[in-house]
Length: 239
Image (cartoon, rainbow, N blue to C red; front, side, top):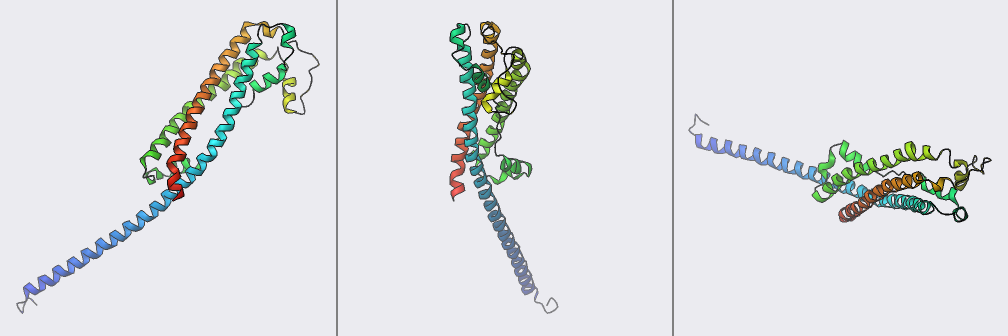
């Protein structure tokens, strides 16, 4: 073509080929990006739907736990109100039952597999809605605080309060409230009246109530945050 003096036509042809190749590449990239976005949108929807379901379940779990721990506090308040009363008044109440409720097991576990998976797999960037991401970070921070408070409550009970009561009350009689096979009336027949004349009992109960209240407040904050997460994931989950 050059030898025939058709240089201009050659370059037009070459430029046209280059433009076609570039258009082809851009179209391929566009299709690839479209497919990738479609995949990510699908994954985002699935993740948000799982989060929505998890936190609806977590709200129920937290509600049951709050009921339990508030019952603990109420039992402790009742025990505190009996400190210093007459023996006749004291034994009108089922003290074993009150102590049992006050020391009921207090633990719970959230459904958190979805959060762990998106954190560990680095898929947190799938959540395009900043509100959800911010709420999850706040929840993680609050969860650590709540676990610390619960740990302090358990430690106080196990290392301070329970040892103080070991030679003063009957755990065997307390356990009758759950019908354990080993529970029953103690043959040594402990007298609780001297215990309820001690200022130490009042102080132990007071400090235990303080720890209990800290856990309740952190749980109530968590409950409000869960409501926000459920609301933020509701629309996406139902799309």
